[in-house]
Amino acid sequence: MAAVTLLSAKSVSRHFGGLKAVQNVDFTLPEGEIRALIGPNGAGKTTFVSMLCGRIPVSDGQITFDGEDVTAMPAHKRIQKGMAYTFQITSIFGELSVHENVALAVQRRLGNSQKTLDVEVASALARVGLQDRAGQTAGDLAYGHQRLVEIAMGLGQSPRLLILDEPTQGLSDGEVAEFIALIKDVAKDTTILLIEHNIDVVMALADRITVMNFGEIIAEGTPQEIHANEAVQTAYLGG
Amino acid sequence: MSRALSFHLGLIAVLLVLQFVLPAYHHGNLARVMVLAVYAMGYNIMFGYTGLLSLGHAMFFTAGMYGMGMSVRLWEMPVGVAFVLGVVIAAVFSLIVGLLALRTIGVAFMIVTLMFSQAVFLTILYFNPVTRGDEGFVIPQPVRQIAGIDLSDATNRYFAALILFSVCLLAVLALVRSPTGRVLIAIRENEERARMLGYDTWAHKLGAVVMSGTMAGAAGAAYGALFGSVGASFAEVPFSILPLLYVLLGGPGTVIGPFVGTLFMFYLRDLSSTLTDAHMLVAGVVLILLTLYARRGIMGLIRERWLKWLP
Image (cartoon, rainbow over all chains, first blue to last red; front, top):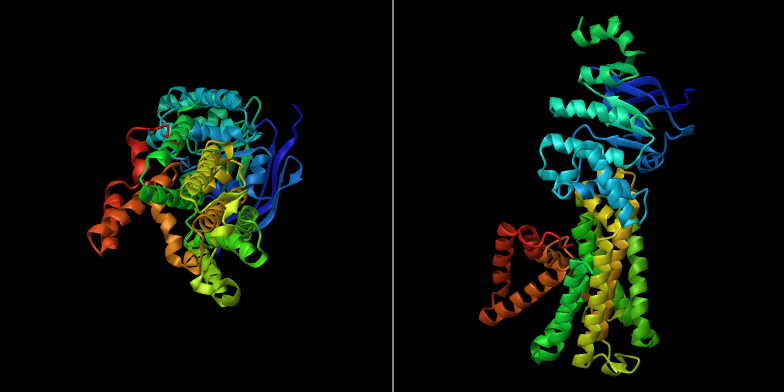
């Protein structure tokens, strides 16, 4: 497959007062790839993807999505262009039913057809295995199931780029295995950027891995290359 | 027909029947309650569904009331035309207030709406020669008619109030069950998440302010047309707090809650004032009890326990 660049960041930085959370990051994500973004806690991963999808503005640099400069574009417009972001800290509509949560993700691209809406919601829920819980109040679900609602909301948007921020946090081993199968399936027609701490998930899914530490990218390559990389070993183990 | 629609049509049917059976005193009360409930329903769109707490809704009520009243007083417009003009003025006014006030959020938004409303109140007082200030003015009985129908007649007045109430009730029902309504609820629950699902939350909030303000304005215009009085006391702070109380009591985020809350509060005040001069004390105690034991208001509690499908 000819690698068309879907998303790129050019010397992107973010400072919070004197703290340089992300500095001078260059990043390119080709269409169709599953990219994992890893790094120790506090490395700036969430800050970086938050700038990609527009949750927080960049201090400096440029972000391009699908050939268009989106640096100054508000988040909801970037989402409308085909990005989807699932939150690290579960951020669902706790008072609403599981169905309503996913319907909110689906309805924006469907217009007013209640019938198609119900079909699409059911299909997104079935993909994460929550089809039997559509009527339950989302906030009453077990934590792992809330994570799955979050992922179903990502899928429901049928995005071109799905950004998953630590999606397997709090999932059981069985659920993690199902998650890996699900993402492999989704990746057939969606580009995926995955922040993940579970190294087994990263190794099972990622085409390429980007490693961040102290707000900078310290390595990038195939899982095998990263596995053998000395700088990565140092970052994780100290040295 | 869905359960929700039947339920609300049922309420309208009951109110229609009550027209013929209620004694005169309660008949008059109910007409007033329906108009005030329209005010509260408008408030509920912003507060109950979108999560925007306004402390200045009296300004929208007054915009409609004075828009209607001044058109009659100054230009001798027929009341029907003046009513429509009042609603349009309230709509435009709420758009302007929304554009300015929505630059703030949370507590600042509450303060800004309160201040705007005070500015409206003081403006009415300032232009005393035109507005008659806090004394207000009366829409004389002979002109209070639409197409030859005398609105000061108790039966006609009840019907007019019922029509306005029904239109607004069904409009709110349609709104909250539509995709747009779902987005408003999403903003109330978690605005950041709604934004990250691709919704322009600011534009939705502005839409909610305009719908809410317009409905409050319609109530104000109707109040003036049906009961004949237009005055600055309707622009004062307590009149901004009333719809908040009605909605809190009846159940924020329920279509029928504002009506239930208005009815409850109206009769609570009415009944307790026959027992004691300290009727506000009774109201206060009931409010505290409801806050302790039914935080989601009367209809919120009923929905939680029994009628889960209630919109």
